[in-house]
Length: 165
Image (cartoon, rainbow, N blue to C red; front, side, top):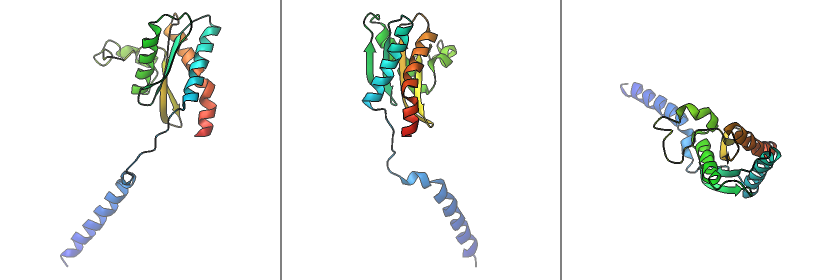
């Protein structure tokens, strides 16, 4: 009879523990990534949006790990726009947030880390709650315009990405 409480205790623990770790049974994780063609479409749309404003920019699209997929610099955009666009895209994907939302952190120890730029112009690329990558734009007279062009790049593919799920 003394085994009965122990038996029920073990049974309850195994049921609770078994359900709590059901997702951990998989040994691999499926990860969605942008195709090269999608990254190119985003970059081209961002450049076109800024050209309509009479602005030459650089744009970088990074994957979900912050690794560059596409870097484009319009014909007369300043060379400095390339590393700034890259770092804005990197920052957006590392924090999964628009870089404009992080400007108050720029002077903090986090904001002073290498490769982080916490000013407007970087946006994460998401679909259905999944982070796919980030886009960063540099070269406009204001970060708000950089961000508008980055958003235009995302908007060019957002519906197709949502349909692809």
